[in-house]
Amino acid sequence: MDFDLSPELAALQESVRRLAQDKVKPRAREIDSTGEYPTDIYDAFRRADLLGLCLPVELGGSGAGILGLTIAVEEVAKYSSSAALMLLLTRLPTGPILIAGNDDQRQRYLPGIARGELRAGFGLSEPQAGSDVAGMRTKAVPDTGAVGGWVLSGTKCWMSGVRQADWYTVFAKTGDPSSRAHDSITAFIVERGWDGVSVGRTDHKMGVRGVDTGELLLDNVHVPAENVIGEVGGFRLAMLGLNAMRPIVAARGIGLAEGALMYATEYVKGREAFGKTIADFQGIQWEIAKVAVDIEAARLLTYRSAWLADQGKFTKEYVPFLSMAKYYATELAVRASGLAVQLLGAAGYMEDHPTELWYRDARQLTIVEGTSQVQLGLIARGVLGHDLWWD
Image (tube, rainbow, N blue to C red; front, side, top):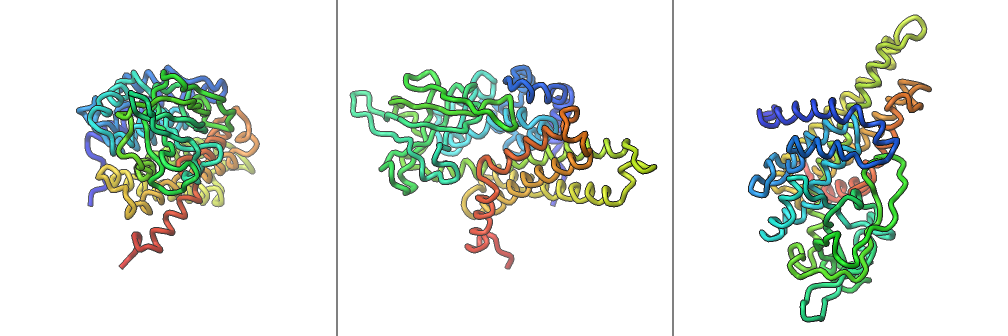
């Protein structure tokens, strides 16, 4: 059993760490304050060939896989969860195409992502269908005209990168809109420039600013038959795509926790109180130690889940292991950022320090791509069904 990164992944980690320190760290507060999309950070990722980490070499990527992207996201998230989200969005919308798309779809839509010429969004959630995915109302009906294909109508919401995206992976009901059967939902590739496609309201968020989150409006959008991803009735594809994303979301949590704990630790080492530094108090040391243990535990869970996903092991029997990583690492982000605020005291609550930024950003991670409660349900289902069992 080898816990060391390969030389290639170790080199990737070091190069992204330097980039994050040089480019992302100085911009984190400004990105949060202005809410403006950090094009300079995106361009830095593009120049460093980080936008195709999880894409295969034959599609213009580097072939570093989900583990490679996980490592990169962790480094960037130490300073900016928003910048880390930009990297995550190179995999979330492309995942269904990588899993079930055909060669034409892969060649048309994925090399542009790797080169930084195209960006994409992922349309699953709706105003009345967040965790309850089967409750979606966006519908796709066959186009009975000469050209065939499908006509999509509906609204997707809480879509990250919605304003910047050039195309979207969109899930819609191809069966009865009221049906909750899994074979009633299908995935489509929808291009931003098509008639009937528009961006609705963008959200005013508590954190993770700089990458817009908002609505995608679909008004009788014609989608050619060749833009169906996989099979009609492929709801399972949505779950497989999300399963494979768990380690990448978890990496955002680990990186945020690391950044928050490192900053708070340096602060308490230099802050005098009661004739000594805050770091001299045993109670403070214990709290730092507990979060340090949690960070290392979260990393082991997350790197294992990324290793599994890179082998295609993101089907039902592996879900508990993937969900554990997402649950543990994102809840850790909340604990670590909360501790960081507390260790700085009143100063930690002020915008003079990044601790309040980490605290706001951390809450998002326990909600997106399956809430902590959804992850617990999936883990429990795995135990009850003996997918996770110990004899």
